[in-house]
Image (cartoon, rainbow, N blue to C red; front, side, top):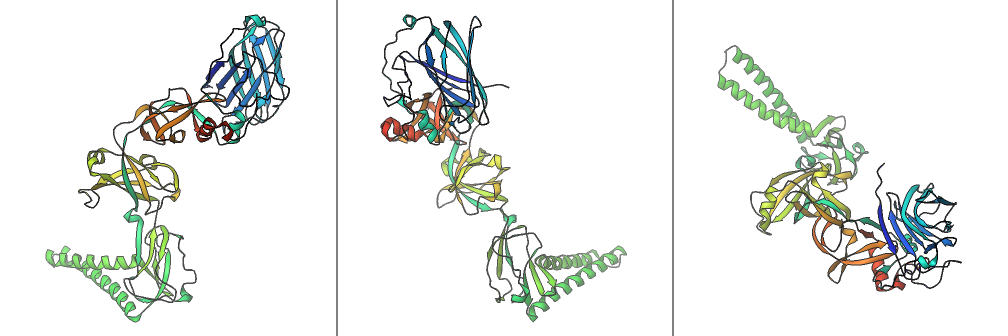
Length: 499
């Protein structure tokens, strides 16, 4: 299986492990001059390893920090095997059954031959299993061969592994992503007309308690045709219903008779047309009535016109109901409309765009019309005179019904084609004194502050015009704590291990 690996290798002339802020040492650890640090990533693990200048026949302690990339927490268990091989095939290996403390293994190795070694690190455990290869591990014949390096001032920010493991921390490589330009608009969530119904009583009557002991409550889901309410009709109401039914049946009978006679050439086309018109008009009234009510032993039952949730109840048990009175509001939120109010200066974008994304206060994440089985419906023919915007309507499927009718939205009308840009997550960007900044993890415990020039934003990612290079790893969670460490190391969370 293809494995992605990122490697950062630093050779330091400072006191070995000099990145930490405290002068004390690990229990019994002695750190040498001219050490090396390695930061390397696989798909599963980050290794940050430090070791002194390696000399034949001298014990060398390797400080191996292992981070589980599933959550950027310390590897707390697992068997670590270290095997080094040089060009002549000479091998040196060591196994440690567990870390000396969370995230840290400290194998001690002694080399019998100088040369350039390849280091194969194998971790086997329930938390994570991985294989890491580190190249160019140099072993010298004696200390005189160790290259002399001048101490160089460092502007990097120290933020230790133990500090990173204590917080919500993450980083990711800077890569190119497909982004699309957009126009900002305000928006509102609207019901789809056929998924929204106000239930009106077609008759007058009384809502008797004894006939409505199982009355549905607000928030209940009902199916089309399901009984919502039983009404005991007034005498006049019963008479009106019977008249509607009788008129319909009479008109139907008369139309069928006229058709029969017309086929026998016993009546004119005009007479047939008159009978058909009367029947169809009576049928509309009768169907409208039967779609809303059923005759039951308790009187007349009002039924749900659509599948949906009862959103409103406008009566109490025992009330006298009037004909035409609104009783319930039933809403099916499965499909909704987004009304986007696009500035009049962006009419061309409104007309040409077929997609949009939106954010809603109180709900995390970006919603994209195309990802919600949605589509653009229409652009209004005229401007809204009050705010000089043009309404654009989109329809979409409501994910888990969590978007509510009446919510306001921040809408991004998509324009042009998707293109690839260097981009990072919005969470990686911190506003410092009006400047967009991000923190790059240069190696395991060293960070750099970058001032950014940004471009378009799409799908939670921001285009980077200047300040970052492709392949660098930017802090996406915990950037604020890194900033605190830059301002004052004492203010960073915890002090971590000390070198």
